[in-house]
Amino acid sequence: MLIRKAKISDVEDIHKLINHYATEGKMLARARTTLYEGIREFSVVEMNNLVVAAGSLHVLWSDLAEIRALAVVPEYLRQGLGKALVETFLKEAKQLDLPRVFALTYKPEFFVKCGFHLTDKESLPQKVWKECVNCPQFPNCEESAVILELK
Image 1 (spheres, rainbow, N blue to C red):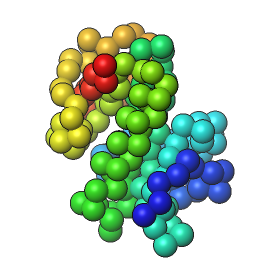
Image 2: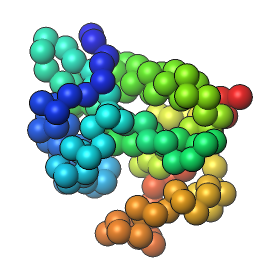
Image 3: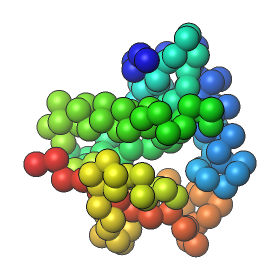
């Protein structure tokens, strides 16, 4: 297993993975343009030259980052790949001296196992919601907010 920063050549695999879960209603879809624009935020897990998991760490402000678009190829679930990516993002957040990391998720239990705790979405700063207003689920979002204090 190799965890590395994503490359432009990974965009199609990341797009396919994220949108597979989006069609099942398990995560939000991402456009290719969004993935290309944000490629530097993404990391992937590679096994046998295949991208089998992906996700991103998006910095929102001096004190807050979000784990976004975390997904694992179905055949590779429950092998610790998602957790390994979360640990990678938390290490990256610590290196950036960020005190808090959160996620909006349909799978809060996964993040709780990674050390996060549930929080009210309304307790997050307004800047978190800038992308939410363009989401088809807004304002009736069923995602849960989880947060981890690093300091």
